[in-house]
Amino acid sequence: MLKSLNISNYAIIETLNISFPQGFSVISGETGAGKSILLGALNLMLGQRADSSVMLNANEKCVVEGVFDIENYSLEPFFDDNDLEYEPITIIRREIAPNGKSRAFVNDSPVTLGVLRELTEQLIDIHSQNQNELLEKAHFQLNLVDAFAKNRSLADKYNQQFGFYNKLINDLTLLKEKAAKASADYDYYQFQYNQLVQAEITPGELETLESEQETLSHLEEIKAGMHKISALLDGTEISTISLLNEAYLTANKMTGFYPAAIDMAQRLETALIDLRDLTAEADQKGEDLEANPERLQYVNQRIDLLNSLLQKHRVQHTDELLQIRDKFAAYIDQAAGFDQEIAAIEVLIAQKLSEITNLADQLSETRRIAVQPIQNTITQMAKALGMPNTRFEIRIEKCKLNATGADNISFYFSANKGFEPLELSKVASGGEKSRLMLAFKALLAKSTKLPTILLDEIDTGVSGPLAAGMANIMAQMGEAMQVITITHLPQIAAKGNVHFLVYKNEEANKTTTNIIQLKDNERIDEIARMVSSGHPDEAARNNARSLLGV
Image (tube, rainbow, N blue to C red; front, top):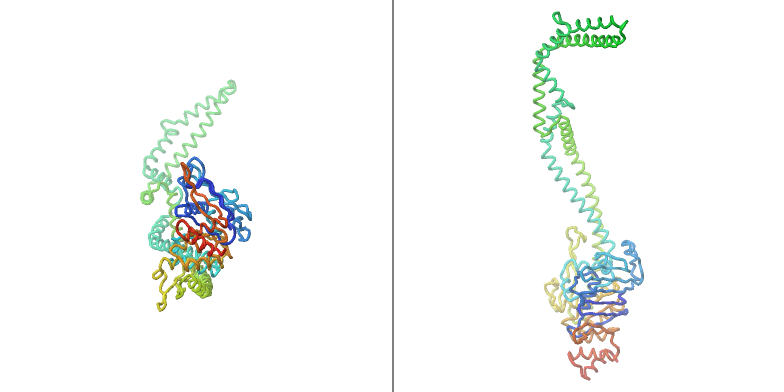
């Protein structure tokens, strides 16, 4: 529950400290006194968006701090999950710096606004007048039934598994799209692959063929050159080898008396050996080279084929063609494997569908069981709130599986005898919605562990006996949880265990909002003011005493 609220430098609040007890507390004040400002500060602490315009003094930071007793609400797992220090008395603080930047803290540890909202949603529910319209919304009606049915863990489990199911469906859709595209491209890939396979390309082949092509194209020139080399080295007219041999013999004769000739003779001998080998090789190559037009034609055709494939696939080397061939092979294998993947994921989808269908059936059963007690309770409360002929029904219709199960839930309502219930949104007036919403809040107070609820003028448009009925219900709610009500009605104000007054303080150059807890006589005066809608007289004070039972 909310033990205290401390506000500084917010709107026209300079400094405000207020302690709230357990049970039913009421807050009143004249129009414009600052009740909405108080509520705005509380919303800021709960994670509402803020900026520097909320500051009373633009040069100082704004701070809103709440102290909560959370000992009995099993929130330790939340603190563990978010790496926060758990304290039975937890302090939540929101600060807005002069530059508009905000920070949030839980027990002095900084947290994101997402974590702040997730925590405070488990601590306090603020109901404002415009929330009455939520009664018409299907998701709100479903949430109300689920809250009473206490099926949160089951609903969370279903929602998680439904998410897995949807992911499988999406995966299957993408897989089928890929399979369809692969199927459409299969013939293309197969043709390209076959063409490259049939080409029987080997690594580095083009370079080898181009070298052979050069040789075959210049065969006669090469053969004539070989013969000329042989003739020049060892021919009948001019013989390089004969001259070299004569030089060797001359050097060899001098080795006995001229040591330098020894090295010279050896070198000449080596040169003779190399030239004789070279002459023999030139003779052999000249004899081996034969014109081969068929081979040249094959090489030319092969080079043309490889160049056309290189140009077609826009690459430079035959090794890249081999990589493209392997890529086409992978495409073909993948296309062939899609059927198996699709079949496997369809099996998983069928299994998951069976699982979530079973969970949805369990959810539906919890809701079906909850419907009758809800109908009975709301009908009885509506009578206490001045709608004696109320007929309230909750209708459940099966629908396609969705994130919340397989149920469409609708509220049907009639406040008049002899009229069949119709959809609540079509027949309930604003005042009737307010009273029904209060009835639902009272119902949820008994079935949930929410520590605190703040009702912001939920009694708008209500008076007389109806106000007394609403006051009684709020007082009953206060027995199960902390209830804080902002009200203009004396009947409700009189039922509170404690009564707070919001008022303005006007000085020479500034106006500020303050709040105090009223003492007995002060409370009589305030309720008398509410009774008389102005300056209270003694009759109004007596009326106030009567309402207070003093």
